[in-house]
Image (tube, rainbow, N blue to C red):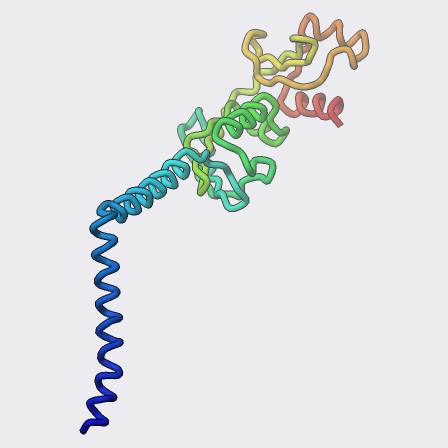
Length: 206
């Protein structure tokens, strides 16, 4: 029994002393540094709020994973066709502002395919890194009453039959044409049909 008591005291006293030491250190920190943990909590809250603030102010950009929801609108019939297409890689890494500027450039010089479909305008309806929504407006059922080729700011422009409404702007410079053709353009060169028009434009852009 004496041996057991000796062994018990050997383990109990150090354990009690260890526990008392922990309790004393906690009391000491509480007594002399009463707001220590409040400061730590406030610091953590500040860091969290700062992280949220930085996250909120980061500008959204397009990526290779951004979906493009394209709506083709016929202004004559009011018909809308919506499809999901891949966003062209030249539009990756853009903010809303830079994408709008790029679309304006396209609007000023659309592809021949769009021109043949009666392309009128292009608009960015919504923007996020996940998806963008774009509307292309066409005048698909325009009566083919002929066109006039004229010169404006040194480039060929296509006017509708009234010679006032711009149907299409081109990047073809008048100075690259023959003298006789430039004279025709000054007065307005009449083109009878859309096929003749694009045949003429292709011959000077190829």
